[in-house]
Image (cartoon, rainbow, N blue to C red; front, top):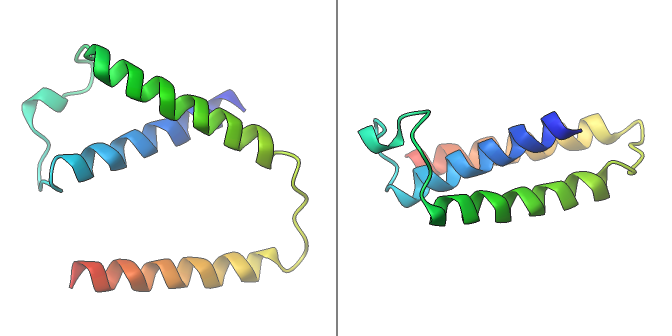
Length: 88
């Protein structure tokens, strides 16, 4: 589960960074992988990481029924349509 937590945390941080930077077409040089994090960035990652850990822990016990794939597909289709409207 630790890998899932790390991947989700990384994706959330990437999306939030993208939004904060004003949705740039290319990342600024300061965003190069491997750069040291500022103390504010470390706090933000720790906060998001804690929330992700709680989410993963709480959702790990949920049992999925047979119809969940169809439900997920309709949700993903809806999200795709929202993204298309956002881009246009």
